[in-house]
Image 1 (cartoon, helix red, strand yellow):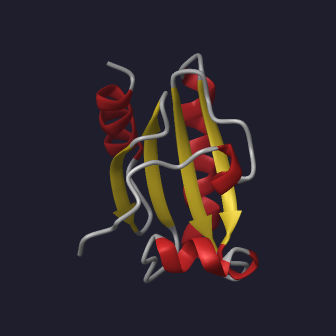
Image 2 (image 1 turned 90 degrees about the vertical axis):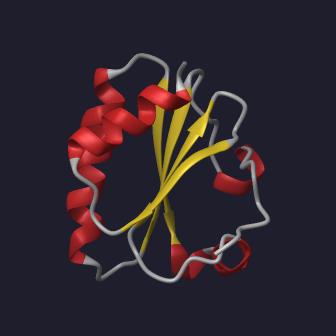
Length: 107
């Protein structure tokens, strides 16, 4: 799958991105793995200075969901300081995988 979007800015995610990196989570209201993903991403963001977690409701942002070709929730994007998408994953991530992906974003 090729996503034409390479960068996401504040206007796309509806929040100020982190100074070093941003963890963007696309979620839906009744998604149980989304709740667990939120906890993991919040924990990782709290561990690393300059990293922000932003959760976006898929149903309220259908244009963005279509642009990013989201096929399921949760979908997580790791953005570097410039908003470039460094990593994309679907499903509940493991904390270690998020930390590793974040390491690539903050280099």
